[in-house]
Amino acid sequence: MDQMSSLTGIGRKTALRLVLELVKRDKERVNLFARSFIDLKEHIRFCDTCHNLSDELLCSVCQDGNRDRSLICVVEDIRDVMAIESTQHYRGMYHVLGGRISPMDGVGPDDLSFASLFQRAQEYGEGLELILGLSATMEGDTSSFYIYQKLKDLPIKLSTIARGIGVGTELEYADEVTLGRSIINRTPFEISMSRP
Image 1: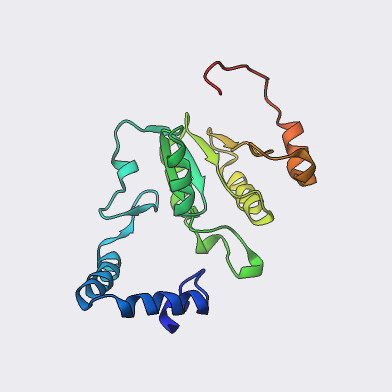
Image 2: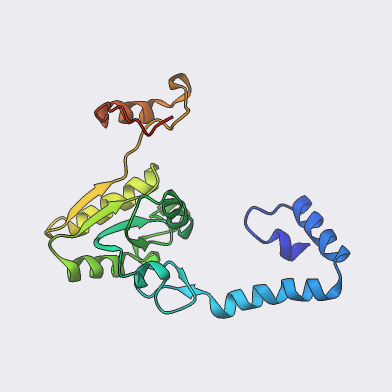
């Protein structure tokens, strides 16, 4: 139970439930379950280029010759790559920082993969666009500003993902910062026949 509850997001009650479930299973299934975690640590690694998860030197995105290499979306976490990929609207590359600058948590620029991002930007040079897909938090904004400061003299384009009111959200429940950004970053109204 102690080992299960050491996982992020697993409390002691959930850990107890999981352990009791494993006790009920037959030995072969529990061994298969345990081996899968050993295989995970032995075979899954981080991509040498973008720091995404991979079972090879390069992840499937970096190996895909059909991706737009002039676009790099900078994200904090591998889960962000998965979220963006699930939209099926982005065909560029990624760079996973491994977190965000957070002095309160003892995380500085040297703790993240900024150096390899800056190297990629310098090697590509003109024509590159970095899309800053970082959280709309103080730490995310600090990380974005740090990237801007380091790359402002290079002939590359920096952009951020749009921020605003989510689909299905009532305006009265939106916070002031989000609502303000939505007004400032408004887009032209277009009617699409493909929408329901």
